[in-house]
Amino acid sequence: MIRHEHAGGIQLRGDELESQTAHEVLGWALGRFHPRIALASSFGAEDVVVIDMLMRLEPKARVFTLDTGRLPAETYGLMEAIRERYGLAIDVYFPRAEAVETMVREHGVNLFYRSIENRKRCCAVRKVDPLERGLVGLEAWITGLRREQAVTRTDLRKVEVDRAHAGIIKINPLADWTWDQVWAYIRARDVPYNALHDQGYPSIGCAPCTRAVTPGQDLRSGRWWWETPETKECGLHVEKG
Image (cartoon, rainbow, N blue to C red; front, side, top):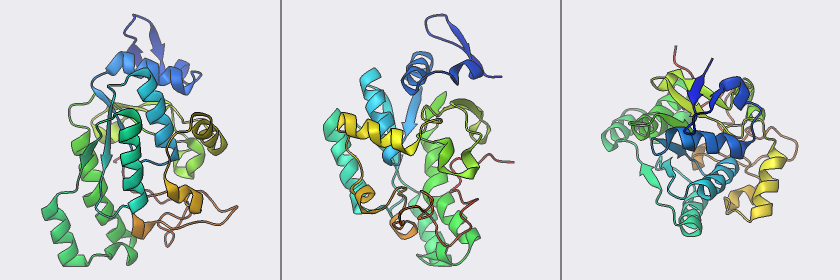
């Protein structure tokens, strides 16, 4: 069972944090870990909600992102809008140039379409390695993950130990939120969001690996649509064996 001491001396266990609101969980996390805590943002709808909450709680909270080199133009536009809205300096981590060059030379620029192994290889180079560099020196990191996003996330806790990343603490304040709650927050506070959401893209990743979905389809069915939808993940949120 996770147990941490609040900055004010109050002790909360992981199960007690499950009953807290997203705002309360973030407040606890900042009180316990700031400045050695950061949000890893891909600038999806959930992430802009968390950014807005963070900036209201702690304007100096750290936010970083992974620029894979294959992101849609609309994602870069949103990054600039977020910078301007909150005066936020976003740390950007890029894939290692040598690793990308080797991968493309050996497997081609669009290797991910040919096999799941190749897609995971691309994600490892462009996303997983940069994330690991972004987490260096942190005691905790924040995500916008929700349980209803995928069957691989149904057991998500609001606060958990991330064994895939040296046992640091992972904060998922929106774990129990619905898609409707996310958009209600965005609209109520006029939070900037990715323009692709208005074009049928509920989940947005790299441009070649993301497409629009039709009404009624699973929210993540537009991601790596050529793979089995029940189990696909990029590797950022999968525990290592």
